[in-house]
Image (cartoon, one colour):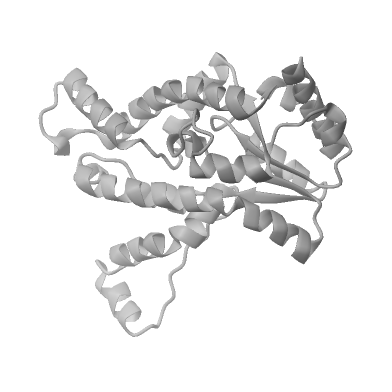
Length: 288
């Protein structure tokens, strides 16, 4: 959805945007603020963790609980109930399920199991992104929202071809929303890596990239066996490599199908009206 004029967006009776970019640039802060300004907030990660991967996540909890004789007996007799408490701001259950490959004594997963869960996430993310048009209409018809924002995870760029207008996800999003790239700085990327080391987020790697980085990390560390890889060490190293690989692809997606705002400019936005003004400025820049 590219606009023929700034007024086409500003004066539209209904607006729908999909925001994307690396984690930590303000997507969720923006979405929370807009929700308070009567915008419908659709979180792709929340949809993934509830609708499409909720059963996998809860079964993983139960698998761990079954290792405890006391809890296992209660589970068998339906005496206790285990559920996931994912929220827009807390995706830890999803992160825990996806895990990190490496030494099982340090909480790592076998590489093959990690790859299996990665594929589950890919399928779930594609489905969650293709649900955006349905939720736009649902938000309007059921709740009366006229403005809609889809908050996507950093891995959106991994499940699409940013150069292909016929890509199913791109086709669904561009037909119903304007794509908005929130562009961070090199400092934002450095700070994000530091935060990731303290609090890992759900991660998705394209299969070939994962295998390449897995082999490269083992070579750098002088490790032969997969079980000797430190999960936390690979997780942080792999995340940094993935982050820098994603940045030019985010820009390509914006160049082809959307608009760009700087994360530093977005940080000054205080309400829905100021956000509309910021997007209008981005539309004007693209038109020029």
